[in-house]
Length: 337
Image (tube, rainbow, N blue to C red; front, side, top):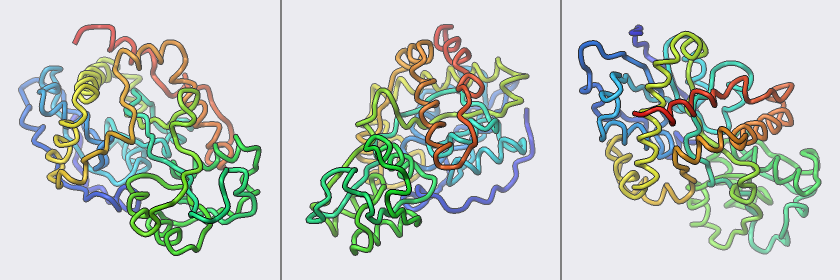
């Protein structure tokens, strides 16, 4: 499955503001005669690399007869584009890009981590103490991100329509500046950017947070694969799933070490990753297999797709069974490693 390694131009995305995209660890050293090469995309943040770093540390690729070629991206949509072009076999996306698999552009093969970093915040002394009181107020939000998604969820829960607030679309760094300087009444944004805001507005008020909607709704990041690969080579997908599942369980059991390992993997300062696991929920493979079987995971993806319809990303909310390979996930979890 070797294919030409093309230079992939990556641009814009909130995560690019936080961490440099750097060379990954030496996974290619696991190469062995007869191993299957797989190209795998990632984003340079804790959720994006923790399992890959653990797989590298534990020698899991070699264990499954695989040789990974890892490629850095700044966002999920670019990886979906690369999957469609045949330049990538597998990738990682945040919850904000889930509308692309939902629209048939790729298959989700595994939940990664559940994001709990998003918040809707307001300024101290604003008189705003609930989401309902945002009616008519200016809310800064990066369009199409998980921040936008939590805003949509919160408004719906409060009985408000998106048009009931003055939504001001801006990139993530501008949200930080606009909120800090009082140009907007509220913001839908995430940690660690909120930590940056707190330096100027230490007493900001959090009106709602991601975990308020769990377990009914959640914001999962996901691992994805090319449609053709899932259809034609399910055995390769299963091997990759076994790598990810074993790596995930190590990360879940060793979060502090996983933060340090992720920093080392990206050759980034350890301080940039310290505490990163505190704004994620890491479920074990056993839990994810159970939730895949009982429909919980499908419910998460269905909830996201419903939001994407509201946001105008897709015209209808499809059955998650059309794009999440729950059967493959469960089979990989149940069959030995």
